Length: 193
Image (cartoon, rainbow, N blue to C red; front, side, top):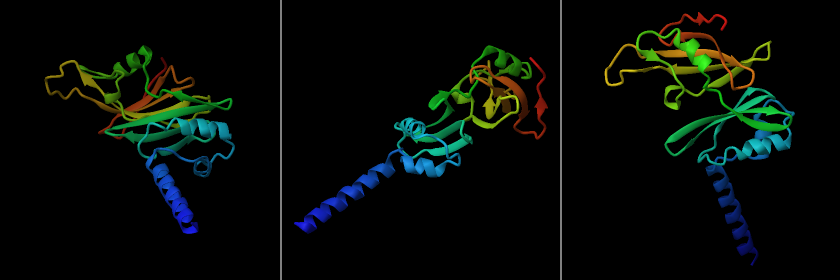
């Protein structure tokens, strides 16, 4: 009887550990150990943990701005995605890092040449990351974006790939700061809007 109980306990522990490692979850203790900022509340970490339930594999964690911005990158089947969260007032809020506002694209497209234009579209943008918080309380974001040509069926040199740096305070309105063609080393600074 004792051996049977021990065997059942072992099997339960083994498969429980295996299942936990196969899912996208991180335990509360693992999250606490992983992040450098030590003042995240349990509520914040548990809410952040819940955002990863769709992931088949354990996501890669990023602490973009310790204590303020955390993110994860994961896979679900053939798809990869990146989620970023702003922590304010003990709450975890999902934020968008890819601009959608017309003013941003008007400014960016004023620098684009030929038939090539930039627009919002997941297939045109890499994962964006918050790089740092600036002195004026803006968040600086970095990304690589590809333009599209209005002549899709014609192979053209008008397709551009830019490294972009832009900033935001509210993750709704974005201001282009600088950019460079990914084949060059020289950054072009953007003037005021």
